[in-house]
Image (cartoon, rainbow over all chains, first blue to last red; front, side, top):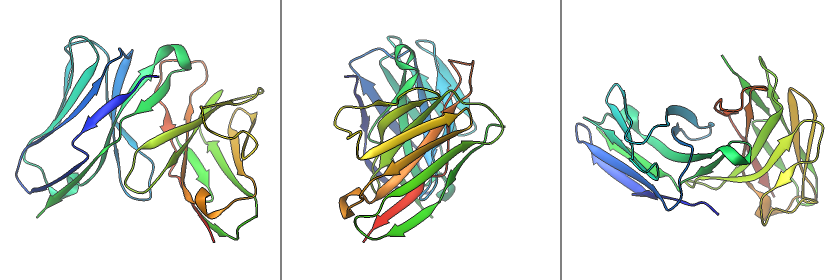
Length: 112
Length: 117
């Protein structure tokens, strides 16, 4: 069974601060995705990283995929209250109908 | 876009009743759909993979007779929680993959909040 360890589970910071969320696995995934979910809604895909060492930027969000494709990080610069939400990493398993294995999630609260 | 509609968005019912949740892909065909369960402030747990025209594949620990899945068309999968009890109360989310595009992302519905009294 492939598992994804995500940390931290909870994070409460002040507006303007930077933060990093980590996602680690002992297994290799074909790709890794990051989602953001708001209460009462489904998760929304932020990015997919495929290549080892890949870095993608989405405005103030920077996503990295480890060289061995077993770990990833999400860095948010100058966090804003609108960034508040549940951030989920998910590993994609090509051999299993591309099913997703989700990390436990990081509940981020950005206080004004 | 790729829109997935889930219905109902919220349901409250008495213990012992069966509840059906629908997942529809509105603007694309989906050979494969997935059903997840999520507890408050927790991550998504995959329950089963629904394949059009064949039996669903359930994850370990998920009762097939408790959570009935039907995927009779390329745009609709249903999850029926049979003889629901308070411990079945949860947020249920479906997702769908566009047919013929194996490496495309899953598109998620907005979930169904199930409360069993």
